[in-house]
Length: 374
Image (cartoon, rainbow, N blue to C red; front, top):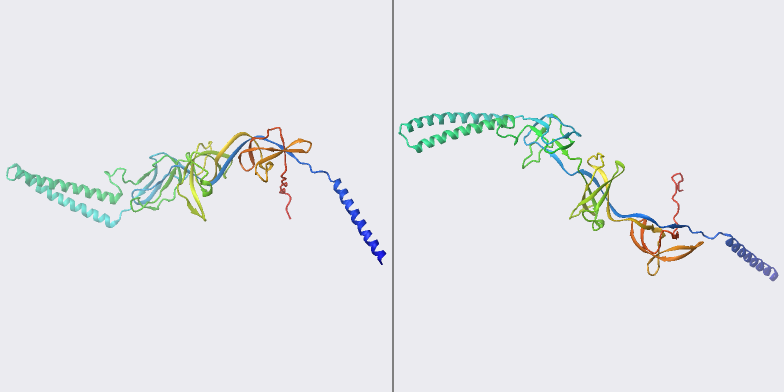
């Protein structure tokens, strides 16, 4: 029994020893890990933040009537280009019957009073010429006659306004002809022929007949988060990209940052505005969604490497890279970092363009579109 147990123990020891030898043999047969290298290159590094918004005209005017009435003619449609003073629409005034009758009665009464004052004035004039009455009495009669004439004119003008919506003396103050107040493009015409429109006054904003804007002078209007607003300032350059216009970037300048934020969905947002320098001959439609890259800092044609090549000392946190000095032999080089855009980082000192830098941080190849992860 003891002999059999001894044999079993010896066999186990031999098996384990043989397995260890085989493992070590296989380990020695594996090829050593080969590290790839990359070199620094000249890059333009831009540090920026992105704001979302829309492109709108800087100057946009709503054309409103200064009298109420019915739209009789519409002479423009969206997309038309107009100049200052061009006719946009023509109104037809539908008078109120009660007001019209009242104005007629006032006019008749004013004419009756005028005839009476005229007779009195003529009598007083004859008496004054004969020396029967004083000059003061004559002046009073003359003044009453003049007031009666003025009352008739006022009643006639009031009747004309109620009947037609305007008068000869009113000029452009109230007219049925609605004209463009700025030169530009008609963006919208929210009414149709036959619609009733209300005048703009202190108590009513009035009915919009058309919206006209200068589409050749566009601005970006967007919002930035409170975490980013402290990084930006006025006059910073912007790069505007529009989803509807592919492969085109518009240059702009940041003009305005709101002094007060607005809370939206639990986050505080600040409004910003930027002026487009030029549209490059491309027609930009008002209201297009756009993204503005606000350039916080920019370094052109500087020595840079990928951030993935940079290592940091565990104790001092100082940045360094490993530079190849022989076949798969590397040495540490301390470096001074500059501006980073999250992918590339500027190298101020420590290496040059001829150094081969060890790729120590392996990045898995992205899965191709033809393959699906299971």
